[in-house]
Each structure stands twice: as C-alpha cells, then as structure tokens.
Length: 227
Image 1 (tube, one colour):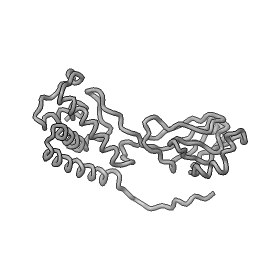
Image 2 (cartoon, one colour):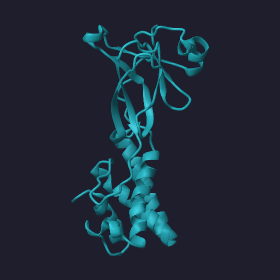
Image 3 (cartoon, helix red, strand yellow):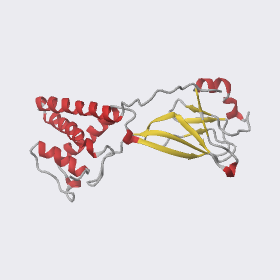
Image 4 (cartoon, one colour):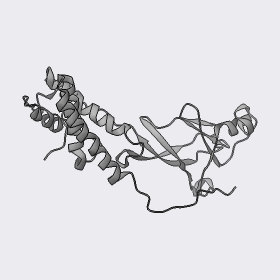
C-alpha cells in the first residue's frame, strides 16, 4: 500500500464514506475533502508534540564555525537540541583533535566569560557550549579558526502539501495518523461519539509508539564531567 499524503487522506475519506481524491485532483479538493487533508496534518502535529525525541525526527548537524563569531543559530525547524552531544570534529589541517564540548549554563557564562564578546579575548579552540535564552547556542572560547562542530537535534515535522508528500513518521504507524485524522474529521462534523471512539484509539496508538520507539533505557551511565 502506498504511503503518501493522498493515500492517508483517502483512507480518512473512505472511513467517512466520502468521495476519495486522485493525485491529479488533490490540489482541487473541496469542502469536506479539504477538512480531511487538514486533519492529516493536525494528527501528525499532535503525534509530534506528544514526545520530544521521536527517532524519526532525529538529525545530526555539522556547523562550520566562523573565526571571531561567538553566537550561532540552531538549524531551521529545530524542536530541541541535545546539548550533551556537541563535539568538535578533529581536523589535522587546523591541528585540532576532536573532543566533546562541556555544557555551560548561560548565567554562569554571563557571570564569568561574557567579556569575550567585548573584545576581551583572542578566542581559541571551543571547549564549552551554552544554550542561549532564545534557544540558539554560543561557544566559549569563541573560535579563532573555521573549526567544525557536530551535534544531534530533533526537528519539527514539515507540513504535507503535495499529493506525493510522504510523512516523516514511518509507515508502520500510518494507522495512528489515520485514527487521529479521522477523529478530527468527526469532530468537524460534530459527531462526538465517533470522535471520542477514534480519539481513544489515536491516543492508544501514540502510547504504543512511545513504547516501541522512545522509552528505551538499554544501560545506565555516569554523566559526571571532569574539568
């Protein structure tokens, strides 16, 4: 079975006993068909907000630093960054070895090291990573060369727009999306008994997704950092 925006929307329409869409006619959907299209994205968004660390939203980013620049922007569409994963990538051309960056609280940075942003430092090889209040990040010391850092982060889902768009959520969970979208469709119609039944199934499906993908604790490790 195909797994596109059209396919999931048609699954919802079929459950609602409505006329389904073709790929060529998807953009020309009307009335309740549009509501079902919107319901698919609403269900995906709800699933996404139900956990921060869905594995299908996991990404790894490389950032080439700019000499003399302290503050940097998170990647577009970032939901959350795992600051414990920041590391400097080794580069023989720059005579630097790879190492983990130690997380430093923003208030401690302001109290002890913010002078570097006022010309009070010559920079160096970054050793600390700081999460800023606007959910971006900065480095201490700021880089004096074009080093590369690498880190893991989780992104927000991109809305489905076109007929052949494929959800980031793996196909094994397609019925969870369909249940949620069907619930939203019944809610739009005001059929609250059907809404409640489908919403209950939707929440149960999300719970199963968490069990299968997110609630894993294979080992326990120390997080003590030696300075």
